[in-house]
Length: 253
Image (cartoon, rainbow, N blue to C red; front, side, top):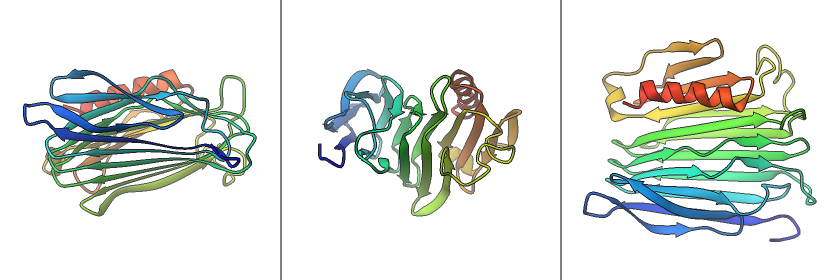
């Protein structure tokens, strides 16, 4: 911890163990970012991210890094929602996610929601690097404000690359100080929960998912590669999760 905020990094390394399972030679957490291995499912290793402190607060710098080797399968979740809060230190907080998946590896990144509390200022950057033959499920859910309050400022950028070629690169900014109109009909239309789901499957190369509406504020879109993007808006976190879960069931076969 410094006067400018907390610095913390969590690292996960997953490797095939040669016996049909997945080993975790690297499992390191710092400060507010604790990692816990949970009971595995088949050949998949499971890790939970445990928030040991409040935050991120203003001025904090958090990072989570995960590397999945060839033939390894890793599922990462979290025990609770992450809440961005205002802090005593001035300035923007940052939360960086860096994920790398080798060919033949699989990563399921399924944390709980990120809640942008009133007065907070957070920049989230998620960067996923994939190799040919990698499989990915990446879910991102954001809730703008707690019950009965306005949101803080939240900027989120997601970049997914396959063999160095971009599959997806987009940024969204919401809340006070964000570009005008973010909350209007051309932006979020007054909704307070937004999410996206990226699914990458080698078989999508020959049989890409069809573009379709899931409901009025949710759609599936094939990307330029073996991948699909689901984007959704909802009035609350519960409804958003139901929409994304249903979309995942149709894509993750």
